[in-house]
Length: 400
View 1 (cartoon, rainbow, N blue to C red):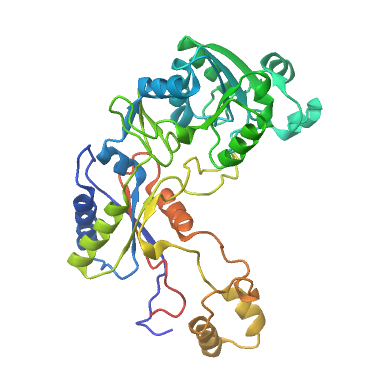
View 2: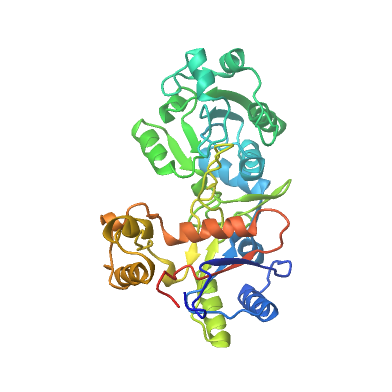
């Protein structure tokens, strides 16, 4: 190997930033933070580096917040304020509990229908093995709370220690609403209890709405239909409503950021003007990966990246090096093998879909892949790095 040949591929760096407040100019703060980090650590920016900004600081700078009362007012106006069937929520104090507080405050009765054995993102109420032992078919059986308790007792989340069935029920009653809890996986099961439905699933919401409307429900809305416009001066999200929101305080939520395409393009322009490098920029929330221990699917946001520059559209177009080494060039080694593989990369088709030489590569959106890397880099706690710089992601074996 040439001593001047690059020895490092993709590098992901968390970039420390000031604490962001409402009204801050993120395009200036992010640009300054990235360039100051480069100067401090002695690295240079290059074309196609990726600057990723976590959605939370974008929403915070926008002041995109709403209160429980704002949620309650919108729910009451759109669903009538009487009995509301609330179906398929995820089990989360941060993501859903405060939304449920607002929903309950805007109704007289909540019929809460929980999917089982787990919610949409993998939080378990009970295990499939326990269901098998009890002879319960989750696709057909509708369980009352009494039946659920008789069969399965109390079940606490392995990570949080919370019995979400009791927690959600208590929360609804604290808001002055009557509460009835059932367990089912067929959307239409709720129609025996309520005709005004708020479906709270994230990635399956369009199908759920379609099924309920076809079955004759009076009103069918999703979390993406609540707070799509300001309520009494609140924040809002015209595309996703309450989806992607997080708890801010006991009475306030931070919504998913909105109208930020101009922000990513402004950051791109400022960094290019000051460094000469044509970087790509994205806003990211949750990554898209599954925890093998807790079986929890990370993606509780409606999308990984709601806004990104044009160079981040599409999917990777990569060859599998081990396939080439073990098949096409199995008789070569050393410099001859390196040159043959490098030639294949330089001459590869613009679209390798269906090619045997690309099998085993990751056919996911670039923003989902890079967003997952960034989510793991920035973490969700106290690292203080809400901006991530990814270098070398678009390099391949031929890049010097």
